[in-house]
Image (cartoon, rainbow, N blue to C red; front, top):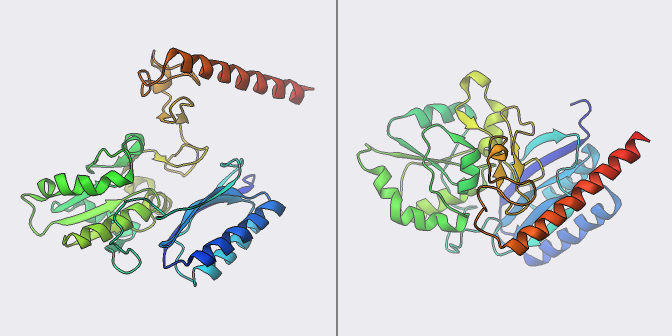
Length: 310
C-alpha cells in the first residue's frame, strides 16, 4: 500500500444502542476529529452503527478501538481499502431512527436474519437454477454494476424495498422448487436487514452475501468474478472497479447521479450543469446558477495549478 496514505473503513453492526451511549460516543469522536485528520459519515441509531471513516492508519486504529468498546465487541463487519486522497470533506455524525432506513420498526436484524454466505460459496449459490438473486440497492447503483442474472427492484431508496417485496417477489418465486432467495448490497447492511424483513414475512431459505460486493471483490480472483461493472460507493470515489480502485464514474453536480465516461460524451451532458438523468429536472435559472458555480470551480482549479507551477 505504498503511497496510499488514507485508510478507508466501511462498517456496520446491528445491536441495541442506548441513547445516552450514542451521545457519549458522538462527543468522543468529535474530540478525535478536532485533533486529527478524520473524515467520513457515521449513522447511529437504537439499532446500531453504520458508516465509513477515512484517516491515516493510526487514527483509524484509535476510532475502531473506541467503537469496539461501545458495541460490546460485536462484529463491526469491516471492509478496508486505501486511497492517496481523502474521500470525504469532513466527519459527519448523524443520529437517526434507523442506521439504514427501511421503515419497518417491527423487525430486529440483531436477533433474526438470514444465513450469511461467504464469497467462496456465493458463486455456487447464485448459479443454482432454484436460486433467485436480488440486488437490494438503489436503481442508480445497479446501473453502475451488479451480479449476473440478478433481479433489479428498481427502487429509488431502501424504503421502497418492502413494497417491491409485497408486489413482486412471489412472481419471481413461481416455478422454482424449494427456492433459495439470495440477496446482496454494497457492504452487507441492506441485504442483512432485507433478510430480517423476509423472515418476518414468512419466507424460507434466505441468504445474504457476507460483507457485500466490497468483500466479494476483495476475496475472489478475476477469473471467478461474477460481478459485472463497477461498485457504487457513497464518497468522492463514486465507484470502485474490480481491484477496489477508483473507477471510471464521476458525479453530476446538478443531480448527484453517477455518470460514466460514455455518459459524458452524450449531447445532454454539460459538466456541472446537467446530464441525461436530469435534463428535464431543472429550470433555466437553476442551470444558470449551476453554470456560474462550475465557472467558479474551474477558476479555482486554474489558480491552484498556477500556484503549483510557481
